[in-house]
Length: 120
Image 1 (cartoon, rainbow, N blue to C red):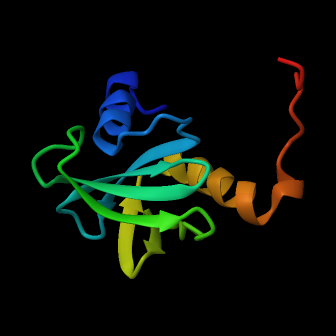
Image 2: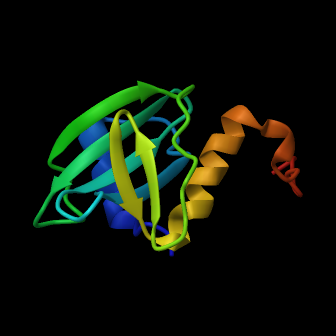
């Protein structure tokens, strides 16, 4: 399920992003607790904390990292989790392909499918 447009717009305003958001997905601190939103643009990965009570209202910027950082790999099994910037996060299985695509765009461009309509 894609991230709802209102949440995407709140993140865009919170981070003052003028350009395109390439990828966006929610995550939680491993074991529960604080919620986070990962926002990936052409040049950075921003991690926004939403706090423990809300999953849809940006609260603080947890960190900003150059786009050259790998987000995954995502470990699957009992639940999907990944380590990023020294912390472990959990995410819903439906967002695993988003993390994989974000990483592939930087680290394995040849593995991405070709654009079927490159002239649009």
